[in-house]
Length: 422
Image (tube, rainbow, N blue to C red; front, side, top):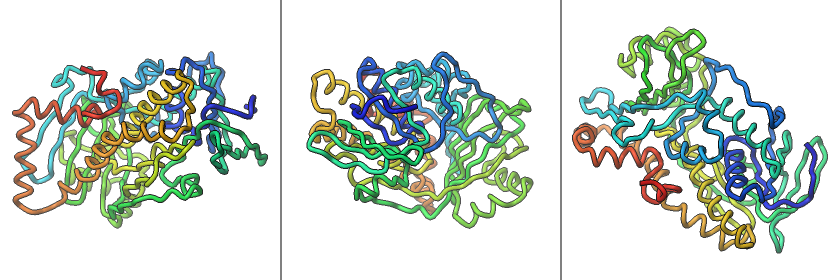
C-alpha cells in the first residue's frame, strides 16, 4: 500500500492487536470520518476486503483471554461473529490455593451473562481485526514499515516513517504509540518507566488432559507462584486442551522449558492436581520475564502512549489486553466527541482529560494484578487462614461474588463503558 496523503488525523505506531483494535474503534465511532494511518513493523499479508479470513486452529497457537467487557467493546465493531467461530467461552472460573481447603467457583449464571469471557487464539484474533481494517476506506495500513521519530509541532506532530528503506515525513494531529513493552519510540521521546521485577518467569504452553474442561478456567495459587489454565477449543486430535500460564522462579522455569515431556507433565500434575484428570500432552513451551512496567507519562501534546508501552502487567488475572481495550474505548469516546466539535485531537488538555477519566480503571487493574500474586505467596499461617476464609466466603455471599466477578471482567466502577451497563 502506498501513501495517498501526507497528512492524517491520527497515526498509530504499532499494528498489533491493540493498535488494530484502536483503529477500528476510532473508525467506527467517527462514522469512518477520521483519516487514520496504522504503521506496523512486521510483514502482514494484505487481504481483499471482500474475503473473509480463514483459519485452522493449531495445538501450539498462543492465545488471549478476553473479558466480558472486551466482548462488549468489540461487538459494535462488527468483528465478534467472526471471532466467536474460534472462541472458547469461559463458563466458570475455579480459584484455589494449593495445600489449603478454601476455594471458590464463579459461574456466568451468577451474573446472568452468557459467559465470563472467552479465549481466542492470537492468530485468529489478528486475522479478524486485519480483515475488518481492510474494509475501512479511511484506514491505511503500512507493513512492514516503522515510525522512526515523532516531533511535536505548533499544530500536531511530524513523523518520519520508513518503508522499503525509504523515509517519508508526514503530519498528523495525533500520534498514538502502541509498539510494545520495550517501546523504542517511548524511549526516543525520553519517557521514563517505573519497573518492578518479580524475579520470576511466565512459562506458557498449551496442554491436553483426559477430562473435558466444560469451559472452566482455573486460577491456582501455589507457594512458588500462580498458575492459570484457560479453556481452548479442542485440538486437531479432538483432545480437550487449555492454555497454561505458569509463574515460576527463573531457574525452575528454565528447567521446565528444556526437560522432557514426561517430566514436565509429572511436575505440572503435582502442582496443579487432578481436577482435569491426567495431563497427557504439552506443546511448544515458551517463557518471558515477569515485570510490571509503567510509563511515567501517557500523554503529551499530540502524543498518547497505550497498550504494553503504557503498562505491562503480571499475567495472573489476564488483564493486560483487556485493560488496553478499555483504554482504547475511553480514548475513542474522548476523540470522537472532540472531532464532532471540531477540536484539535492533539490538544494537551483534551488528552489529559482522557488520562484523568481512565486513571481509576488503570490503577485498580494494575494494583489488582500486582498484589494478587503477592497475597498468595506470603506464607504466614494467619494470612493463609485469611485467604482460605476469604475464598470460602465468596461462595456464601452472592453480592461479594458478583462484585468480584464484575471487577475481574473489567466492569468495576470507573471502568470504560461500565457506566453503560446495568
